[in-house]
Length: 174
Image (cartoon, rainbow, N blue to C red; front, side, top):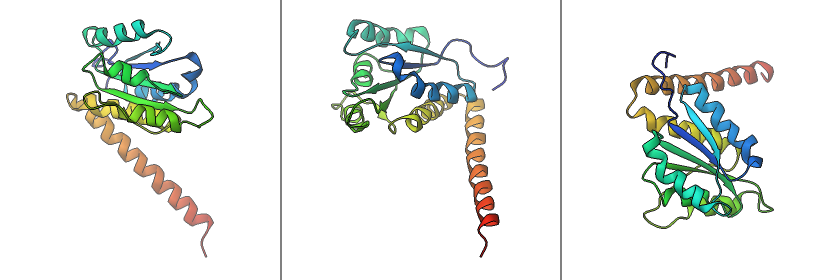
C-alpha cells in the first residue's frame, strides 16, 4: 500500500490489560506496520477498568476502527468484555502471565458463550503476530491493495522456507 493511499485513521486497535503485556503485543504492531495498516494501542482492563473497557468497545466503530486485537493473561477477560460491547471482529491473544503458562488464558479467550465470538490465536508472540495477520486478512476483504500485500507476504514465507531447506541440504548432504 503506497503512502499516498494509506489511511491515517487507525483501523485496528491493539488493546492490553497492562503495560507489562506490551513486549508481546508489540509483535502485532510490528506486523501491522509491515502491512501499512494504521493502528492505535491502548491499555484497558476488563477487571480494573470495566467501564473504560466497555466505552472503548462501544465507541470503536464510530471512531473508524474495524478490528480489535486484545491481549490478556490469566483470566483473560478482556477480549470477551470487548466482544460483548461491539459488533466489530475481536481477536484474542492469550498471554502467558500466570503459573499456568498461558493455558488458562487460552481457555478463557476461546471459551466464550454463543453470540460473543472472539477469534483466538496462539499464546504469546506468535499469537500477537497472527492476530495482526488475521486483522489484515479481514481488512483485505474490502481492500484489493492490502490483499495483494498479503499475497506477497505469503510468497515471502514460502521463500524463507525454501532458503532454509536449501541451507539445510547444503550443510547436511550425505
